[in-house]
Length: 453
Image 1 (spheres, one colour):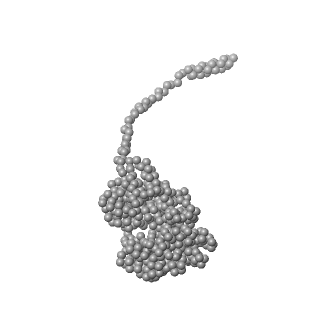
Image 2 (image 1 turned 90 degrees about the vertical axis):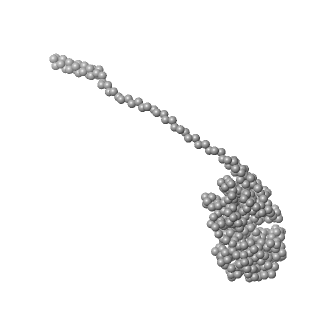
Image 3 (image 1 turned 60 degrees about the horizontal axis):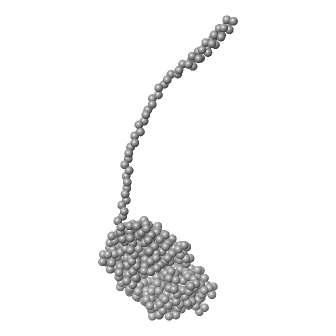
């Protein structure tokens, strides 16, 4: 009993201890409270104010005097002035008849246009030598990817510096043909690969009473002079052509005479239209469109001129390149228009901006679409801007080695009195190829060589 009471007290005391322990408050731990001060720092905001550019006017001179070229110019100018509203562009189109005199007077008189076109290397060199042309080398190097490599390049470079931006391109070594005539004899011009192939086709046409080549070389004789370029540059290497121009090689050298002799060969075999010695280019072209000639030789301008309105409405403009004699695929092309800036321009920066604008692909495409001309701007000729014939010519340029026309690097009397007049002498039978070569050599010796730099 005592044991039971003792155990009861132990339990009671234990419970009381628990209660006491639970009632004792826990010790209070003081925490340090840190109040952070927020400091607002006011910063000065730099406001950059771009001043409105000072309004300027630039003048642009061209030989574009009628649509569609003036239409393209108007659209260019409107777009350019929308992008650069402080620049006013004044375009002056000058007739070809007075262009050279008007431009020379302005250039030498100290009041040149800011931007203008040049048409030949000789014209450009004249102004470069007088210190009148702005050097565009750096600009071109920054934008060279816009242009077709090798096309109209050499015309713009004088002594290693670029003074003009290539634009218009003439492809010269094209033979246009009449599919109807050739179809009568199952002749396919696209199979022609060599000069001998072409001559064999000419012979077949002649045997069947057809005129192989509607050719008119009278008058100035420049059409015959072009054949000098075709035959030489399809036969000799570019190195030999350069030597010929620089007088390191003679016109009487056997390989030069052999190349020229192919023109006399066509005359002697009766492959050219009767009366070619008297008839000019327009007569030959008219014969071609009348069906009196299976082939007609002309450059790419023949396509966009549409035969000078002589072609029937449904005429098929089909061509092949003049075949190579040497076997190398060489395309003859030259620049006929280049964009140039006057060194005495008071607004060179704005003039350069205009050149940059018009050579953008979309603006070059506008030109091709309206004018149907070949340009040195890459991909400007495409299926959206031109017909299949133009696209085919552009493809030809891309596939061949493009070289500049030899006549651009020889004195004018050599071209006029040697190549042109001499070709008429061959047509009329008054001289032989050997005598022709001697005439050209004498003229070139007297005139000397042009600088190729």
